[in-house]
Length: 369
Image 1: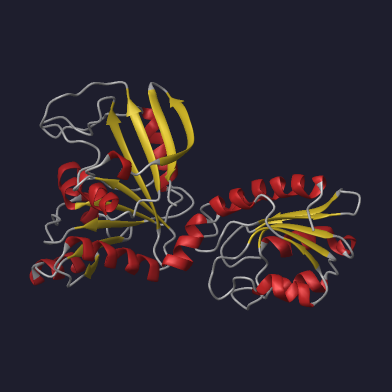
Image 2: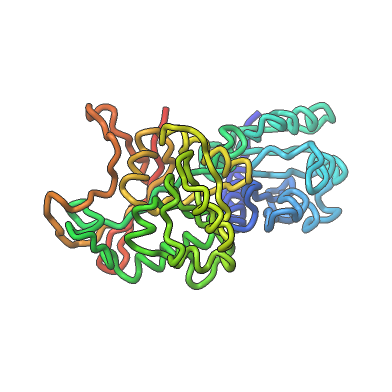
């Protein structure tokens, strides 16, 4: 059973609709849906617009009304068949009298995978799977990471000079990139669930790590600070009562300092693991337990290097400025152990390359087999 040309076109529309939910539906996936008549006309369309709100299928069926009976539903993700914050979508599909459902991707969640399709087929509904599957899987990759690997989707971001440096030999980094690039970064901050930096960056730059102007979400600000060195006078601590702030410390962190950070409004999470790599993995697992879908890592080189060494970076946003910094002591964008052989170098599947003022903005996903 294959999809018709009208159904393929409707799936592309459904994918576009799904993207409207970015930053609004997490930790749920972005989903879009279209109801088609037998002649290929659009009867109704919808998308998952907010977490806890109606799912895409329900919105599309409501838009189509009684005209949906006996017709086709095109949806980017397998309809759910379990009770969550909303009733099962499979039951809404059956109640609407839909005779055929065209699906892009199966639900990756272990408790749901395949169950929606099985429910529909058992009820006599025709089901076509795998239409625009690759694009749909890209769309829900952060959701899949959270539900399957139980950690956030990790976005590594940095701004660097043309020769690959993120600061001068004296540590100066403001500003490598231009205003247009910084606006894009603030937009990105406004749609993610958390923003992380290492303690070196927190001390050197004294950042706020907020979206300006405010975005769709208020991200959790995370500082990886094994020794609890984050100054109580820092802007992160000073604004902890206004913006959620998590300080991730290690087993050697000073107890008094931990209590001072908590008293200042910070959430302090402590790992008792001795190895930095183990503490990093435990932190990502903790963020997963908190249902944080997208984690933006803004630096510095040590933290980014540790994440790349552990194969934990999923996406890269790199801003390249037409500047030459030079100097052997100038920091590179990514530190860590690095690779020994070029064949082992992480490679990006490039999503886009665009000009932002004088800068070049490269966005891609880490290619994994």
